[in-house]
Image (tube, rainbow, N blue to C red; front, side, top):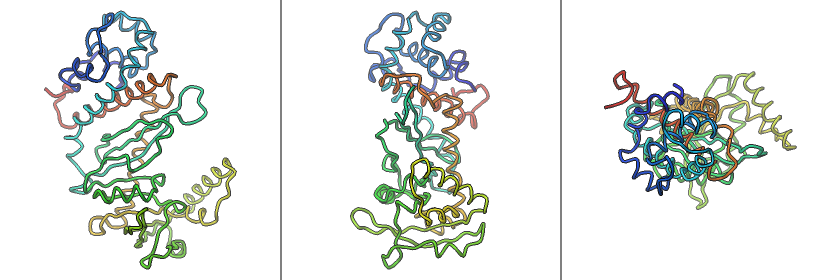
Length: 366
């Protein structure tokens, strides 16, 4: 499914997913403060903007296509101004589409009674940038593969589990970039169940006596492919202790060598020294969780964590199929609106895929 023909030739399918009173919705969120030129309705404005963002057209190509289709008569600068005021509206439309997906993503679960959610973030740079300019924080559910949360921040918006709104019983899968004791404690206090990759340098663990837990001597006896489970604790800022299970799997020799090379390459690029313990930890997959043992044994916990890779594939799809990886804009307002619009396009496609599993063949609900 490509965005271009869907937006232009099958517009009614997309329109059905939008708020009923689109004009009022646009006015409330600042996209239609007044009628200017040929753009007199919110539907007209949304079609033209999505032609530009979802169809991969330049501003000049978009206004030419809009004129050819009889949608609107405007120039590229007028369209750019409209885009700059549409960021808040796109964000509200995204929330509306997300809300519409909830009945579908709640229908199935890997572990009955629990939502399995994958949390991660990806970066986007503006033209000519030498660093990160924007960051998208994104949560996807398994096994539905549908987004249920996203947040757009600038470069200062650090990856943090505190951003994710959770409900009691949610199972949140995260990589080692989320080894923040305060954030993990906050999720656990809200009743969430966490499964995250251990970072030995930023998440100190304690044994039952409250002393630092030395994991490596306990791991050296493992055989390749063998799993091990240990009890551990950590303390948050208020010195409260929280219990976790440490689930470990020893990697194959080839996988361990690849991990070591990656660590050494990153260290060379930063002129850092690598501790021997860091290289030894690279021989293992170490996952921390507060999932009860009767709900998921060590093997299932490690299998669950493997599913976290799906959110990485989701980012690859956003950056390749929807061309989200590099911004064609330089102005802050247009950059934000363009990215919000890209996320909206992605969620429209996901919403249609969710509905396609259970609705009749014509492609949209009555």
